[in-house]
Length: 217
Image (cartoon, rainbow, N blue to C red; front, top):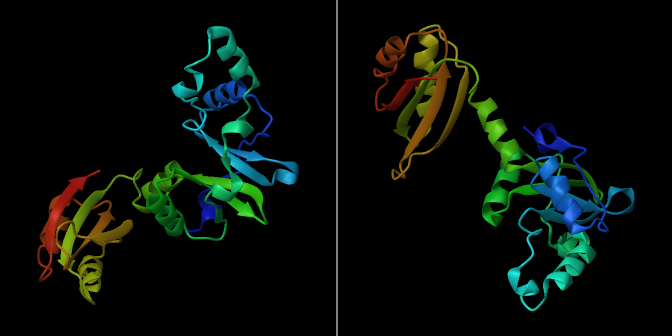
């Protein structure tokens, strides 16, 4: 799962000379929250977001209504964008989990995807959520089970063996450290075309593991 497979290819981009009022309208009409600013050859010059397009009230505090109108009409997106040297970017062959880590650690909502300083795409938190949906087969009906197990070698194999012994297939599988239980691991699996009670009956027999949530989704 690489960035190039989940990014928005050929995203909407504008030049730094676009008036800020026009940029706000452009983003609203296209329902986008992140807008790469590019120069010749689609080389990244900066990034604008809905937040960066907000003019600070202190900037207008001493101006009358005519001066405010003139100030806003002369303001371009290049005046308010985050400069390229301050924009965090990523390469298209990076993994999606690396993209997620960078966004979470830096508390940002997108990463322009560059190839030799040229914008070839953009990946956002929405793209990563879409990837999570696909990983857990959200759109396919089935039984979703969370099984808590010791965080040690062989435990996941025990769970998979119990499922395989019944002749069932695993539609989706994921996992993470158990909340507030540092020595435990929560595996999330999804199985389809099997009644929930049969799944529970089989997985309850796996030694040392506990079903902490089960539901049809």
